[in-house]
Image 1: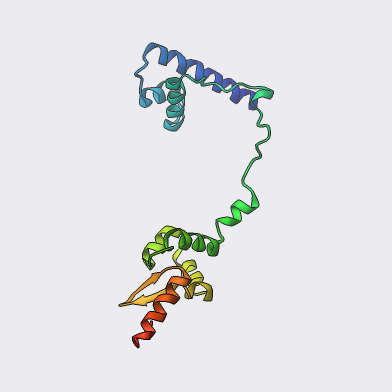
Image 2 (image 1 turned 30 degrees about the vertical axis):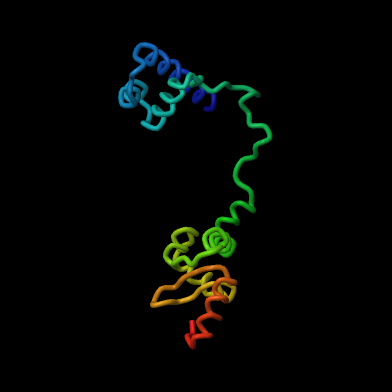
Amino acid sequence: MAKKTQEIIRDMSTLAAELYAKNPKIGRRKMVAALGCTGWTADRILQGLRSGKPVARKEGPASVQTGKELGISVKEFGGRFDYESKLRGVLRELCRDRFVSDADIRERCDIPIPAFRTVAGLPEFQACQIKDRGTVYWSLKTNVDEVRQQARRWGISK
């Protein structure tokens, strides 16, 4: 079956190259109609033809991936769900010398809202939050501690 697919791809790329040689301004729709392929495939073929790269893949040992592994590493995949480190990174990036609203932090760290509430409730992150006039602001722990100390001096509890 793989040989049959390779032949179809070779035939399709040859036909595409001929169509492009006749009319370099050919569009995706006409390419789809002529080749009987999807719009995505026609776009890829046209991009290849316009850039001058060969459309057909070279078969044989040269096309086999060497050194590059399939998939993604466990560490990288697990990093997608390490919400604590994502939040720490956003705080380091945005909050060095400023206070940022809760909504902006949530938007920037790309954590689902229920998980964000859970992570934000951890003691480590509670120390980085301060509430003022109904809005929760985030900053580094040192900045929050400094502001709380100033507020206490004036008899305000934050």
